[in-house]
Length: 302
Length: 302
Image (tube, rainbow over all chains, first blue to last red):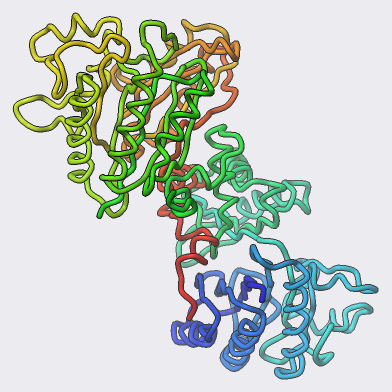
């Protein structure tokens, strides 16, 4: 049975008691909660789960139950765009599974969620590839946000893939899909200028002519009194982590702004880290096999 | 029983049949040959072994037997300084062992080698810390090389720690010790100017006022038609790998020289790689626990 990663993004990053309920809901037999990252300004949490498809589906349904009961988007604020209480749920193939496994898991969950929670479900990326529907991207689905979704759903081509054809009053809609590893990270700027942060984000993102496979958003973090460029790197094989951070640094410097630090949301694939080492040290073909501890773990005694 | 790393440096990097014999000698029950890196210009090989002290000692004695029989320093040439056929043998504590374990293993091997091969043995670094002898460093022991060692041994304070008080005619002397992880790597320069390479090496090494914990040598690589800065980073906690490579790059650039690439000799500790990622991405407290594959391997199913 294939092992999949699943990274639900939930529109709650502040209320500790709700975060605890979400973590408990995810911790089901056969499911590992690898990481739980919450942010109060984004008002959002990202859980990193791993497990077999059936166990993951049970955990996700439990997560949806908590989120739909506890989160009301009508009185939700946060700097991160969102369309649902359970905003987006990507499945990702791990070493022993394929994209087809991830797509199958996404489509099964989508059908169950649409029925059980009366939530409109949109499939995205690889899971939305079935003809005749064009493959939707997350930014396309998110445009307009929760507040604008009722109007959007009335437009041609925006009927949901599963569930009712009206927005859930408090939980909105939900987006489920399958994709390659995504690296989510935020670059904290030593600045209070939100206009500059948005302009830096625009300069680096692919859709505005920036770096391939990069999505970026400039936001103001009230709790820290600073701005941030929040980044999704969709494919570190197309643009490296190092290249993204360097470009943000350059664009910030051009505006007289320093980078304070970076923070990772969730986890990163080992290869992406080895790529940073390889590029920084000009060390070609560097891989985790050149790490002493990995070699020790991999090689059997003679 | 503690697991130790042992990284013998042997003065042979050209004759394939001797390299094969060395590898076979090291591959004894209970000993893992984690890496074998040879360089024809340096005319030197670095083996990375791991095992329990007793098994390592047997493997090392077998290595000494091959090296003493096969290598004659009177007709040995190579750009790397050396004083012995088995030039230097450091023991390094791994996760479950201590420096005291490494010192004990070094001293046991030193006594055995001195007796069995009629080789003068010098203890260095942590293994040479017993009073009243001052702790010797490798550069101090190496100064003058194989060719100058007979004269040096006659000087006060330079009687060997074990073995006879005369240089072995073909195998020289040998240096055995215990130390923290060392990262050996070479930076290839797009240049044929050996004087410039030596000047860059001098600018970065600690002994000439450069970076802490850095030893560096500028050499000419006949087989590649380029120069190289060959570096030992003695403690990546004092100076990071990234800082060394950046400094070499800067010093080379000041002389109008580009860095082609870097190569690692042997392995590097995982923490040193994570430090490169952390510094490059401005990602504080980054550790291997933030890598998806490591988290998957570490966490047990719920």
